[in-house]
Length: 443
Image (cartoon, one colour):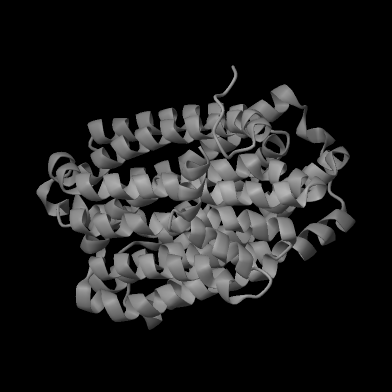
């Protein structure tokens, strides 16, 4: 199928990479529809208090699971692009490192829970709920096979796995609702989701590539991976911190009931975040190739990517703002209705998430991993500081405002750094639709 020509974009790049992106987006759209529908059912079934207890463990363990991944997924994909002949050594070594990381995360989760209960406002969520979700750090180690499919532009296998996994997950959760299962079963279902995806990724790797018996661990490869991926690992931890800390702080200041409401806001607002991830993951090889071969084309592709991110995220934010009151009053029970006006604010943070994902590819391509780390850390500090001030005064609306400001701050920090300021200006041109008008004028 020949894709239509789009004025101002590189047609060859679109033809090759948009098809792969299409597979990723198809998977995520299917997953989004399933998760949102099931999420509505679960929230209404459990009520705001138990829905808060269900979501707290996922937010709490996010930092530890991000640490357990060691930043290896993205960096392994990059290494596979550069050295495809080292596939077995790279994947085998990365898998072992991630399994070790997942096991080491469990005692750290226990320690973190103990500290929270003794030095902060204790959560009502039981420890066993948090440890069950924490097991995901081990099963997610097998997601490393996804790096191979991304590096070889075979996203359709990721698509099949995610669609099947989400359908099966949805059926399990609907059965739990039909059978009036207690909350603990839904906690186990969260862990089961990661098992399904791991099995799916392994199945397609076995079928299309070969057995994992060919993978091997090499100490020299492990040193290379860890030496280069640690900034990405630290960045992933900080990303989890500034994307999840608001939920933990809502629970801390306002209790599980308000967290239950706020969790519905976050679910609906962040459900769109798969779009920038799918796009930038798919076009990353094209960006790397352009950087190597043609600097002018490289910059053009980056600008086009920023434009696309703004157009998509702005459309989503506008539509969501207008339909949020209608959605809440017709889908959720009355105890969740206060989340509607919070969603209309929180969803605008998506614009900066989209741009941040795109500029993140530039930082990786240029080897500016420390700058990526710095802007994420800055966003985390801003988010925590604003949440401390805003949540006690404005409740969950304060958390939404803090998120919006923090995401903006993190994304545009590169404006203040001389060697990346040009990219910040390019993003501003996209944000204020300057490049859109330039393209329209050229028509």
